[in-house]
Length: 418
Image (cartoon, rainbow, N blue to C red):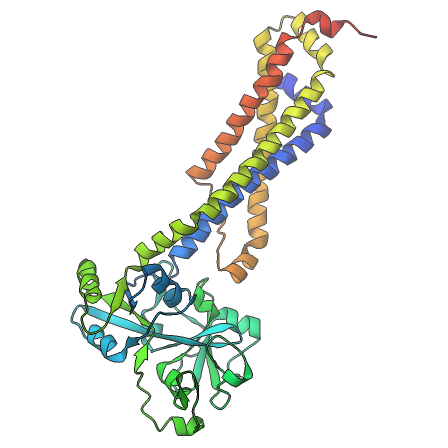
C-alpha cells in the first residue's frame, strides 16, 4: 500500500485548505528564521563596531558608560582627561598608537567628534576594516570636516558645503558657532557603525570654536575664525582616547597600570569584554522576540490541527474504505502523519524562500537605516535545528487526529446517518 501516493491524491482534493495551511506554516517559519537571522546579524554588527583597539581610556566611570559615549556617542563623560595624562600614556613604550576623542558639540542632531589624523590611519571596524572615503579627502585645515555617510545623506551635504557646529547637544541659535563655520572636505563610505552618524573635525577645530567661550557660554570678547587661529589650539583636555599596543599580551598589565594612574583618576576598559557585558544587558529583548515568534508558530500548528480535524468528518468514508481493503490502524495513523509531514515540509521550504526574498528586498534598506547587513548566507546549525523543531512539533500534533481516525469504526464510516 503506497501511503505517499494516497496522501498526495487525498491532498489534491483538499488543496485549498492545504495551501492556506502551508502558507500559515511558511509565515511562522519565516518569522522564526528571520528573528534568529536579525539577532545574529545585529549581534555581529554590534561587536564589530570597533576592532583592533586594545584599550579605551577615559575619566573614571563605569566601563559601560565609557564605552557608550566613546564608541556609540551615547550619553556624556563624567569628566575629561587632561592633555598631559593623554600624552603621558601615549608616550609609553608599549603603546603603538592612540586616537584622541573630543566630544560635546553637535550639528543638527548629529554628534561632532574632534580627533587627529591617526583616526583615519588606525581606527578599525568589522573584521579589521579601515575607514575609506566615498568622496573628498581627510581634514587637514582647522575648519575642515569629514562627515559620516548618514549625516551626508540625511542632511543632503556634499563636499564643499559649509556647516555650523552647535555648542552641546542643542541646535538653538544662541549655542551655534556661526562665526566659525566648517567646510565639508570628505564623506566616509558607509560602515554600519556610529561613524556614519558623526561629524569629524580636528582637535584644533574644537579648540578654535571655543576660544571665546568660558564655562559653556560666550565671553565678552568675540573672535572671528581668523583671529582664533592666532591662539595656541593645543587641547587642554579630551573626552577619551583609544589605545593600540605593540604587544597584545601586555593588555591586562597596561590596563591595571592605567587604572592605578596616580596623577588623575582614569579608567581603561577592554572594548571586546565591555561589549559582551553590555550585550548581555540588552539580550532579553531578543529573547522576547523569539518567544513571540514561538507563539506565532504555535498558532500556525493549531491552525493546521484544526484544519485536519475539520476534514476528518469528510474523510470518514475514505478511511473506512482503506480499512475495509486491508489497511491497519497504524496505516491510518501513518497516513495522517505523512500528510502533515508533507504540509509542514512544504511550509518550511516556502518559509525559507520567503526569508531569502525578504532579505533580498530589505537588505539595502536595513543596511542604510540601521547599519545591519542581512547577508543571504546558508542556514546554520541553529536555523536547521529550528526547522527540525517545527517539523517535529507538527508531527507530534499530527498524532492527535491520527489516533482519532484510528479509533473510528469501519461501520461508522460506511453507514450513512440521516
